[in-house]
Amino acid sequence: MTDFQSKGPVVAGSARTNGSGSASPLGRRAAAIQQFSVFANLTPSEFKEIISAAHEKLLPRRETIYNEGDPIREVFLITSGCVKVTQLGPNGQEVILRLNGPSELIGAQGLSAGKHHLATARAIQTSTALVWEASIFETISDRIPSLRRNTARILGERLQEMEERFREISTQKVAPRLSHQLIRLLNQLGRGTDQIVEIGLSREELAQLTGTTLFTVSRLLSQWEKQGIVSSRREAVVVCDVQALAALSEEG
Image (cartoon, rainbow, N blue to C red):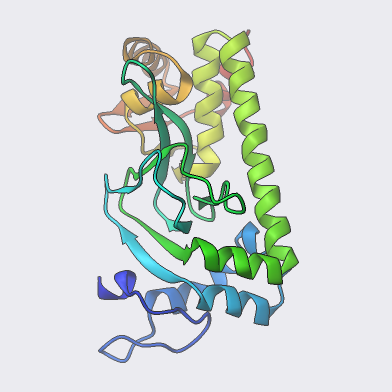
């Protein structure tokens, strides 16, 4: 656990070792991390410079990473696990704005303006992340245009997804909206084979993500379970028939 929480810089592809002489977890995963879209079109030396400025951090399940209103001090790149970004409504009800899985950035919005976080980020499962000080990430982005372009593209894609979800909430009934959201989550958070995929979210979290009630989500999942489309547990939904679920998402 010490490796994950080290505050020292991380050098990509290095042979940095722990006390037993074995390579660090990040060193062993550097090749996979280099494939993340935020590092697209970077030279090996640019990638090494960016990674060397970060440290890797363990995010225990349910840990709050930052709160709504906090100054933006750090940028996080999720390398494993899942983080939810939420806001509270006037009545105190939590709404999930987005789920962030491996390869996704959090905390990068509003860097140049020195703004505060507009939402809260919390790990929903034990996760790990690369962490940069916000000022350092901004300086490196100025020096490496490809990193800035990649970050802008990622934030643009995130905005497009938010627009799609807003349209779904405004125009679709809950059943196709929930099925569409589950389809969207398959690639992002799903674990399993092409036929059977597990999504590690509770019914309450699915309700927060789709803008509906826990009762409605529970009723729909129970119906779909009888049809053999899903199997739900306390904090997970298993998609048993991806094609049938996709067909539900196309209904009006």
